[in-house]
Image (cartoon, rainbow, N blue to C red):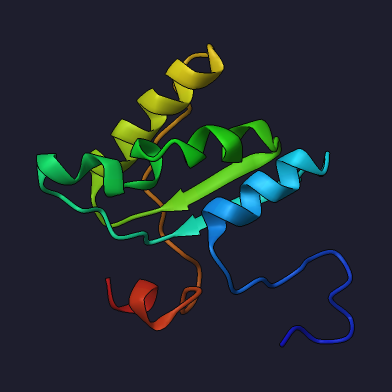
Length: 112
């Protein structure tokens, strides 16, 4: 659970698709989203399983704020940038290599 000093965040364990939709319908806007190492589902037939292939992704973008995505598969990030551009009507966001300082945010990040 978050420490008592964490007043600017909420840790939620639930279905993101439903949660994002409920936030949107309630008029809530988000300052920052993070998607860390989502399953890339690399087979073409599984595109709809990727976050940017799901209709809920458009809801996430409408919630506003910045979006940070970390992935080990560059193609996943490049596809997501193109979808963001298509949905929002702005040029594709920058896709850049990221090297965490120190240990990283998780054991997975530290390993890969």
